[in-house]
Image (cartoon, rainbow, N blue to C red; front, side):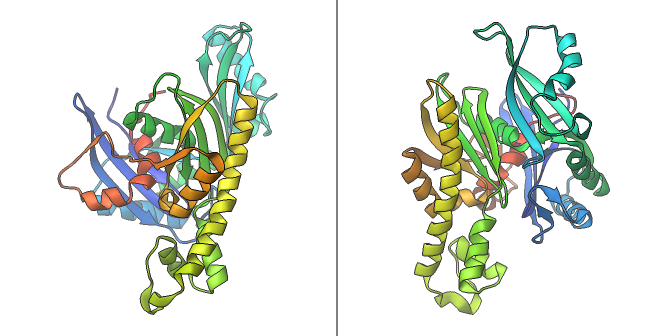
Amino acid sequence: MGKNCVGLDIGSSSIKAVQVRRDKRGLQLQAFGMEPLLPQTIVDGTIMDQGAVAEAIRTLWGRLRLRQKDVAIAIAGSSVMIKKISVPQMTRGELAEQIPYEAEHHIPFARDDVEIDYEVINPQNATGQMELLLVAAKKEVVHDYASVVREAGLNPVIVDVAAFTAQNAFEANYGLGPGETVVLVNIGASISNINVIRGPASLFTRDIIIGGNAFTEEIQKQLAVNQDEAEAYKVGGAYDEHDGVVPQEVERIMSGVAEVMAGELQRSLDFFLATTADTDVSKICLAGGTAKVTALHRAIERRSRLGVEVVDTWRQVAIDPRLDTAYLAAHSPEALVGLGLALRAPNDK
């Protein structure tokens, strides 16, 4: 295996970069940083301002003094479709030839408009068929993300799916028992990835178009404050002279939005449980910046009746002593996708 890529997580509120080194002792974090993006730069996974994103990437690379150009990136949202399918037994060559035609029956996009990939997850099920995980992503979106990375002077060698990169990073930090099932929810600013994992296998994935921005927008609307003030209140701080804003009001707004988000998550979980036999979910693990919102923990716990915990991205990662451990701890939930991408190397599968 070659040298790992730098994980470049292009989110709708910020750009994150993660660089790790793998040796016989395990993983060591060499660099991590974030660069904010202005609102509406990326909307629902679509890049609206390529120049602003490229500039943010260049700024982050300069600040972290990263020399490596090979990066792995991830996409999410309505432009990506993940589906488990069954096909008759065939050789690897036959499968590669047949999959574009097979995909037409399962994806809502025209075949020529998408990049298609797949992985065999069960070579033979109870009915004698092969089970595959089929992934289709719109070529236009893949092209936009790759092109903005090139504009920043970097080389995008891997394009992954956000839900699976989060899973890879989770698995690097947490060992699951063979029959243990957890729900991993990565809550971004505008898109949340839900991934039900049992052991090393993904049983169900879904992206929902709701995230941390919903809290900020509702605080802005109801308290008539600007975005920076709303962001400060969302994370539990005060803002300038408005130190005395009624905290009960913020708490009430946060609880209301948390109920909506928890309801969206629960609907996806209910759908999974209704269509899957013999699955007991043990807990829900949250990642992303919004994972730290306690109102959301309470709402999810109440609806799901499951324990909720925040993922520690650095749990099994040795930290370079030159890095700021307080900064890393504060932003650990946001770094999960970036770490998953940083675990990839050029030409791996």
